Image (cartoon, rainbow, N blue to C red; front, side, top):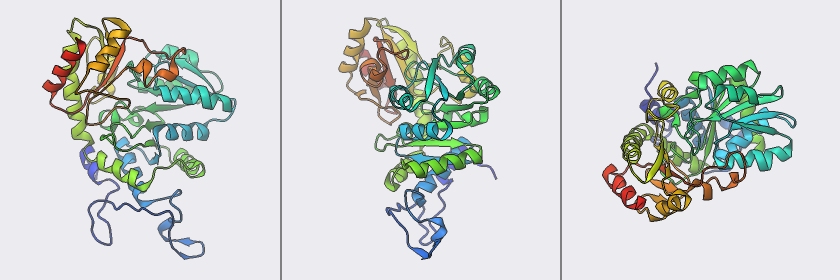
Length: 379
C-alpha cells in the first residue's frame, strides 16, 4: 500500500518500538553491541559506525521520502558529498559542477578533491548545451543543484539525466534547497540525491547532517561500504533530532512557501531592490521548468540591492527579525551576504557571487512581521 508524503514522514522506518511500544524511535546511544556468539551479531548490529538502529530509522525514512531504495545519513552534507565522490570517482576522473553552487561544495572540489586528482568544470546547469559542452570522456558525475545556491538557477533534471547517461555518467542532484517535499529528483531520472539535512529536512537549526539517496541498490551498496569505511556517520542523537524534524517537513514547507511568495512579491515592487531572484516569479528564467518538476517554489529568495554592495551589507546589518547568520532552512528567518559569508571561498573563481546580493531564508513567522522588518532594513 502506498502512502502520502506526510504519512511517510511520520511513519516510514518508525514503527513502535517492539519491547515497550514506544511510538518514537529510541536514541540508541551506544558504540557497541553484545553478540550472541562469535560471528553472530544480534540483528546484524556489532558497532555503531557500521550500523545503529536510530540512524537506520532515519535512513529508511529518507529513502521513502525521496522514492529511493537506499538512504544513507552522514555527519554533514559535505561528508555525504565527499563519500559520493570517493565512491564513484578515481584520480584522473572529471566532474561537471554548477557555476553557481554552495561555497563549501566548491571548496571541496577546488581545495580537496583536485589535490586528489579529480578535475572539474563549472557549467551553467540551467543551460543543457553548456553542460553538454563541459562533459568529457572521463566525466563520471554531472553534479547539479536545483535551485542553485545562492542565485536560484533551475536545472532541468530530466534533460540533464538523459545527457549524463548518454555520456556514461551519473547525475547527482543536491536537493537541499527544495527538500523532498517540493522535489524528488530520482523520479525525474537522477541517480543520486544529496542533502544537507542540516537545512529543511532537520528544519530547526539544531543539528548538522547530510544524506545520500539512490534508487540503484548496487550503487547503494557501494556507498554504504564507503560510509562505513570512511566513517563520516552521524551520531544517534543527531539522527534522532533529524528524524524529529522530518515529521513536520510537509507543513513547514507549505508555510515557508506561503511566506516566500508574499515576500518575493513585496521585494519585486520595491524601489530599493534592483532584482528579485525567486523561481516562483514568472520573470525568473527557470520558472516553467521549476513549475514542471517542483510542487512549489521554496523558501529561498535572493535579491540585488539597488544601492550596490555597501547597501546590501547595510540591509543585512539592519535586519532585526531576520537573523544575520549563515545556513538556511530553519523555522526562523535568516539573512546573509553571500559574497562575504557562505560563498567567500568562491571569491576570484568562476563561482564568485555578485557583491550586491542578499540571500534570505524565509522562515515560518507571521509574514507581516517579516515584511515590516525588510521594509525598515532596506532603508
